[in-house]
Length: 298
Image (tube, rainbow, N blue to C red; front, side, top):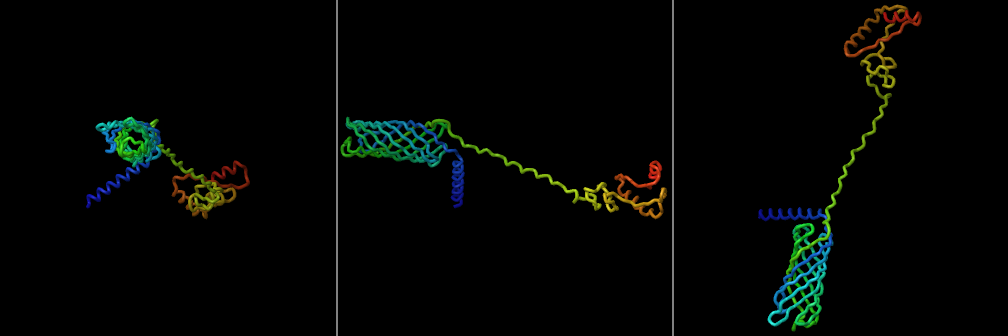
């Protein structure tokens, strides 16, 4: 039971893979020529021995499963005993149905046509219908071996070629090759176009009026001292302010400012890597040189 289940699974998997591969193949729709030779095994009513013949077909692949082909043929049968030979010339229009297209491609065939038969000096035209099965085997894109076996029904419509009957039943075995015209179409490979990357986002325009990098309460637009130490008193321009007042024209720091200046020194020591600029003001009286000297002393 287990072996049967495994065999069924493998078979279904193989058929599924084969069908998928066939679905991906490009459809070959070329015209072709198909010369062939024929072995004929006549029915008993002909009173004839087996014979040989040949012919030529011209066909076209219609789609994945169907070929249409027009065939011309000639066959000769040697009569039995005193019965004369049979010479048959005619043609058929065939429809060939392929189960699938591959290197080995089996097919079923039906055909209808007409045939002119000469026998014992008399001749007559008749109808033929054929049905059978065969295969092609691809050796090259432009060369395939082909063989099929057919049952043939022949009605000569009162031509009186053989006493007692106008209907004959024969078997034919055909062997030949197929020559497609032109280059075999190839599958069109879809060009893969890579998806372009999304465009870079537009740069965000920062609003300095809403930013305060040094957290001193003065926005970046107005801040002239953008790296002020945290927690110190600043002016409206964001600069550190230490309010120390001197008496007019004096450079002596009053004791009341010592605690404030000690805090300034401590804060500066916390940030030894930073540099500082000290600015101050002098009296608005006196000469420029005098006030410059006073400013430096302070």
